[in-house]
Amino acid sequence: MASYVDNRFRQAVMMNPSERTQQDLEIVYSYLHGMEALSNLREHQLRIMCETVRYERHEANEVLYYPDDVGSCWYILLSGSVFIKESMFLPRSSFGKRSAGSLRRGCECIVLEPSEMIVVDYMDENEEYFQRQASHRQSRRRFRKINQKGERQTIIDTVDPYPTGKPPVARGYHTATENEPGDMDLSGLPETAVDSEEDDDEEDIERASDPLMSRDIVRDCLEKDPMDRTDDDIEQLLEFMHQLPAFANMTMSVRRELCAVMVFAVVERAGTIVLNDGEELDSWSVILNGSVEVTYPDSRTEMLCMGNSFGVSPTMEKEFMKGVMRTKVDDCQFVCIAQQDYCCILNQVEKNMQKVEEEGEIVMVKEHRELDRTGTRKGHIVIKGTPERLTMHLVEEHSVVDPTYIEDFLLTYRTFLSSPMVVGKKLLEWFHDPSLRDKVTRVVLLWVNNHFNDFEGDPAMTHFLEEFENNLEKEKMCGHLRLLNIACAAKAKPRLVTLTKPSRDSPLAFTLLGGQEKGFCIFIDAVEPGSKAAEAGLKRGDQVTFT
Image (tube, rainbow, N blue to C red; front, top):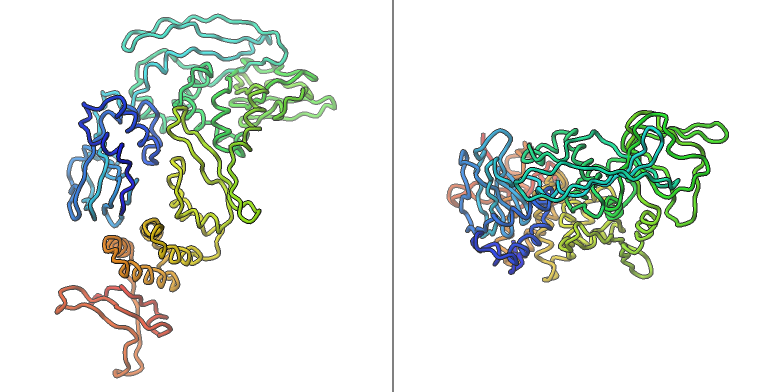
């Protein structure tokens, strides 16, 4: 496969890790930050990785590792391809990770063509690879509260930052009672010892498997002053909030901006009045824990529970509460977004959209996303489009925030296209454009490698593969042809095809290739279209075995 590796990144990552300058580290970070294989890592984890990752290049037919080798590292492919256990891996794929409970490799890895890769060494458990930075525990806490008397308070933490490795200063709090009718509070999620740095090294590793731990981390992020939240904090909040119905119909960029400004709040006791009838609203709120009941002037009641929202509309017009809202349980928890922020963010949606028009009609809509505040991961991601335009985007340049568009398309195209041949015909057409040839080949290789069942048993798709193979031969793209044959051979399953000849002298409706005199196995070279052999499912490239 062709290499699309940025030369500045290649030079930086090829350097001895101990000799990388801060500029080199920023280049490596900028490149790795956009890789899907590393999207689960937090910012500080990725920056630590930038200090240790290595570059390797391997030649074709080289065995990268063998079964039972100790798995001391894993890999991210930059260019080329490798073959592992009946699967082919293409650039940007990761491979070689340890399987659960085993430190040794389970199978061998063969390099199919000259390949560049990043090597990520496993680090000892006592190292700080997956530790949250101490600075994450040094931020001011600022959240709201409605106490048992119904007083609205802001809890502000007065701790000073402390050096890494030093014990934290005991937290001091001061409370400011707020009498403004709309400045309500709500804070909650099980209280945790937010100052303790003990067990921090296990926190990130266990977060995915321990829902209570994850919930505690969310509370930690929410209690920070919004100005102190890091990209890591916002990622944590996004993971939690996207499950809630109130955020379900929002785009990712809108949810991200809301997470950056939301304020955490708690109402301690059941029966506390949160909002009175006719009270001016100044925020949009979502329930994180517990439930509330709204009693309307006509005596109707309505229950709101976790994930439900209430408050202002995305407008700066004055709005007032209809009915009285009371908490139904202790420790009701909410997040609140001030009216001005809520209105600004939701009305910004249209500005973040890029509409692609053809002949006066909108054929595709993209959304601008910034995945961090460093400016290294920003771009447009496709969110909807016509079937024709979505298909065309397969061979267009893809944004750093949308690196898996091809894989996503191949997973979902059946929901909006009547036949896979709609895509197949366009790929054959685009192959004749030299500027698109490599991109078309990558799409076909991914398609065969990931979804071979789309081709098996479908005569039209089988013919498409044969025609594509012929095109590769005509253009002398031997390396790509070899990869295609490897992918097809690895994914194909044994089949039993029974043919009945009218008489011994009747000609075969297919031709064979190979045999002992040729030095390789016997294969079907060609099948007559419309023949009994074709109807029975015999295909060019089938290997004939004798039992």
